[in-house]
Image 1 (tube, rainbow, N blue to C red):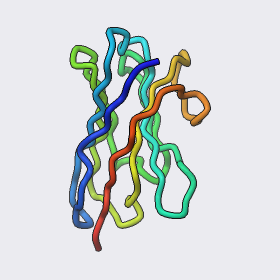
Image 2: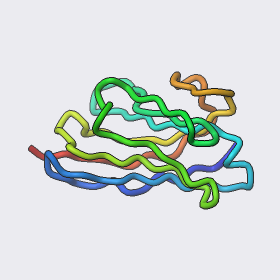
Image 3: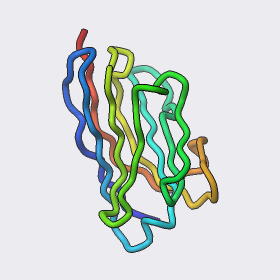
Image 4: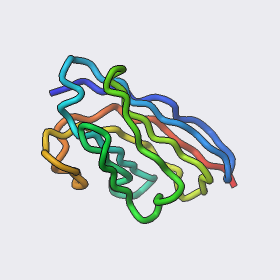
Length: 124
């Protein structure tokens, strides 16, 4: 498994932007597909976006499509989530996750390693 450290969360006004980062340990980062999930208050954890090991394919949940962008820099062992035009409904703890699944995983059960989470709060 790989160790993940999420960062970049904070308080942002509706319509603003934020970039989350997820730094990983180990020399095998490029062999993992990566994803972002979120969990709002009193809600279940939900999928946000995922990216394959090379960064060539990406998949987004409908509720963030066109506003969020997932990317990765394998040379820096880091995956990012750029969030623009945020809305109060985006308020949640955001978690990055790593998957050994070939292709583009989107289910939480496909991911075996998780970050500790970073809080994003969007004010109206």
